[in-house]
Image (cartoon, rainbow, N blue to C red; front, top):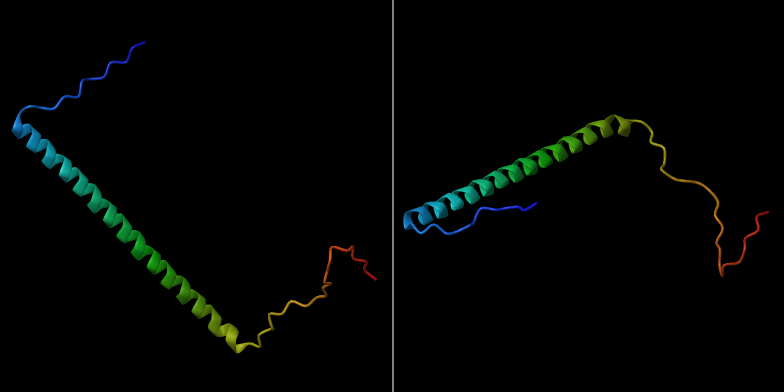
Length: 90
């Protein structure tokens, strides 16, 4: 099977060359503007989401502050292991 691609040759007409250049710049400009709009929407949406999360966290913390809070302490026992010796528990 043989794949035949059309030959890519430059158009010799200067008007067609100028029109191709302008069309290429317009396409690149539209893509850049679209990308900036998408980036702006994502940034504003992310900022609103963070504000909403902080607001919800702040409103949930107020009633809990009135109650007596339990200390956030993890109690337990530990053994210090040194020199890679086996540990025997009593």
